[in-house]
Image (cartoon, rainbow, N blue to C red; front, side, top):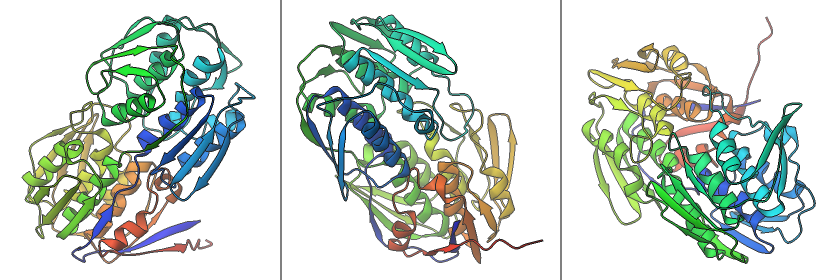
Length: 422
């Protein structure tokens, strides 16, 4: 098993081009199933979640090729509607295949998805919405068996779920008639999915607002598309500079997608400047605590950025209160940060980060994707060397964390973990 060896305490300087967005590319790749033709996807990051997604597409009969960050999917002929249990369990977002398979073939079979253990993330919203469009969904031996001719309809979500919004959009493109989603998620990744569908000839309007309208049954064709930059990866590298001081630049990203995070970093004492497709940051040696941070659906503070910003504030002067409103188990990184000397007190959904004068390098383990990135951020502000294991979680969402941090001036290398026998 590999580990990262990270040397802390060195102010940063450098620039990083931000990879394609994990949370965009997965539903976009699933959407290729709707097209009886070839789609070319650019800026497709080298992630394990993408690898599993491509494996699912191949299993269903698609011809898939990858050349660097470009993926070509030919879904002219689908040979299966059944996603194996082993592939479904690898990632939570695998449930997004349900909508396009059902929309294209009229039947689908898959198991419940896996992914990071962040607390209950039920797919009831997905299932009830698809049922309202005419799908007959039954559970049999732990698998979901779905069939039925889909017709447009009105779907009102009880919460603005990103995954449910995407699944409904994809199913509705293949349905007959018009579908309206009310209380839809407004994340930039939803707009990215809409733009991809439009490039294929679909009729989808309203992404970025709380009401999305899909006129289904349009004849789709192949197309070419470039995935947006990953705003959470950008937040991670901005937080990395903030954690240790210095300056850095992230490029290829829309600053508007990160405004709630950059506002927090500015309040903490950083100087942040945004351009058309880049953000620069200058950070002091010590940050200061900020007003309470509450995670919320977009355009609120993103839950995916909570851990990395918390890591950056571990040495801030004063105390910062975090309230996690999206997931019930998203403070799993706190125990590992405490190993490094952080003073964080958790009660339910609230975490109070009391700034400490120093953090110290330690052996820590990533238990989920964003928590793993947070440990890397904290290691930059720690004295000495940190050994970070559990890299498989990080590789689900970061194409080259070590390479990107190196570009910012971080002393980081990958090595094989030495396990001592007791």
